[in-house]
Length: 316
Image (tube, rainbow, N blue to C red; front, top):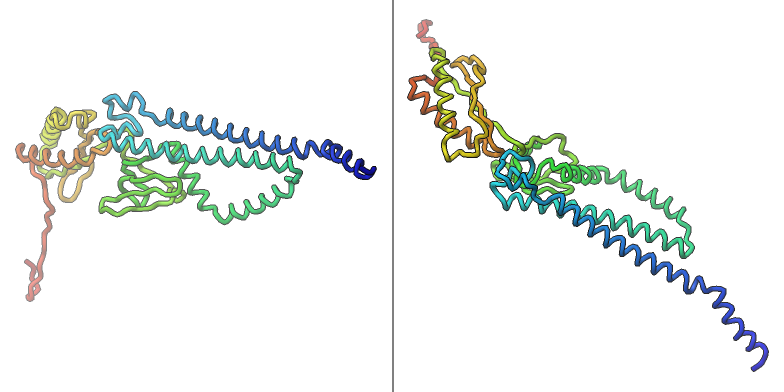
């Protein structure tokens, strides 16, 4: 073996020793970074799943017979609908939080890996910032929809099975997503509303509702007898087993609401469980009609005096 070959053989270990960190240290650190990212992601997703399940599990108040409870408790008469509402919220919130966690962990790990291989992050971050700004300007409405959808979910403004008024769309909520809310109106039409366009919400399914009935009687009627007939009707309806647990209190008379051209309008109200106010109002109309008839109280109908001109110029 000549001297040149000996020098080359001696130089190989030296080259390995000089580049040991590049050949072994950098891949090892990258492997540790990837392993750490996977562990952090798995732990975070598990924690999110547990937190969401704990947050959305039925409360004691929901299982109790208190029909005036808020949120899913108002759907306890329909357990399947309440379960669907909780599951949808759980799936959506859990999915969003898991995706956000994955993006943060992967982004952090990628930045650490690029730093290990010697790639400068400054120019990349600057370029990513410019691209992100351009995308943000072009997708403002989409971002607003997703943010509004997250707030609707977290605040539990409404859910599947609720009857809501979202402006033009009034009906029963069939689906709540991050971008869209689907509402089925009384005619069977399905409305698709972008969450970012929802400016105000009226939810008729939370806490309690009120059945309001305006009863018109003739001007000749004795209002004391009218009040007595209405109060008797309300007490009888409250005692009816068919409406047990539906009427939250005895019906009350708010008095004369207006003096119309055809009669005196008396307002009759009762607090009910959510979503039952319309059925209660219809039943109240039937019972009030029968009660007023039995008491001999006239329910007026529109009356008009018509003057007709004849050919001779006279009127009749």
